[in-house]
Image 1 (spheres, one colour):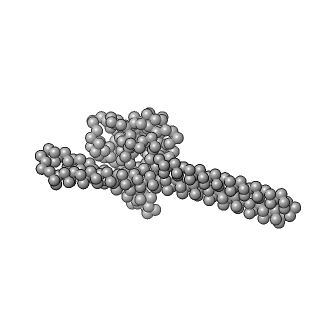
Image 2 (cartoon, rainbow, N blue to C red; image 1 turned 30 degrees about the horizontal axis):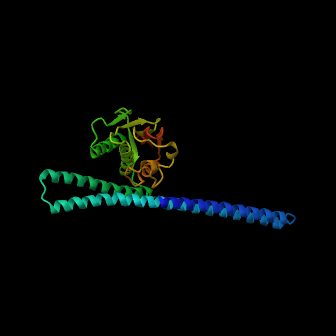
Image 3 (cartoon, rainbow, N blue to C red; image 1 turned 180 degrees about the vertical axis):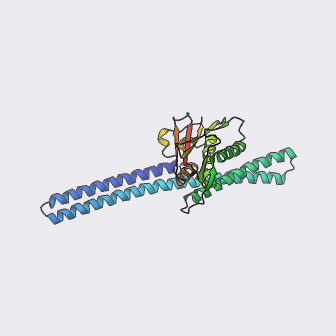
Length: 301
């Protein structure tokens, strides 16, 4: 809390300093122009130098404020990743030490193994999230292959339903594209799988104890497809919807949820990289949210 307050004061300080310097530069420039208005050469030089000075001060102030906010996001990301790595490692160590030092019955051992496997999955997920963010940002052009949207979405949904142990019917998939029609996009299957999985995973995590998720696959005009994931979770404030896709951003109203702040950033980056877009909608806090990925369909040959 103190660190956040310190950063906020730093931002306010640099903004106030920048405004004061720009105002001072403007006053001095106006004074110069008034004193030398009869000399054409000095007048032109004064106007040029004044505008240059004011522009420089504005740019420096904007740069400093952006750097402070970027450092804040980086720190938040490091804290989140540290927590996401440290917690499962500590848990694994505790269970391993218990297995080593005590004679446990088979049922108890099985329970420990299941918990350790969940911790390993969480650890692997965090590592893959960080690696995927770097891979998606890479300028290298990925190999593009045909990806069946129906199969991809169903695979992601089935895997996460098993991971979270959701009841039957908690996750519903509806595809409005007839089986005879193509639902294929050209792209990187691993990246598209990561984007869809992140959206479904978020819908489950932010839905509370009883998660209900609806997934809709539909045609988007003549040459596009949309994947829409809707939940009845905690919702998002409309003003925050513009920020949730930023790198390292974590919602202040949902700190109880785990994450690195990279999930939605990866979603938007993947959608953009494949010629589409990603966006979110929500009626506000407590009203659930809907996230959509729109992608161009592969050309029929």
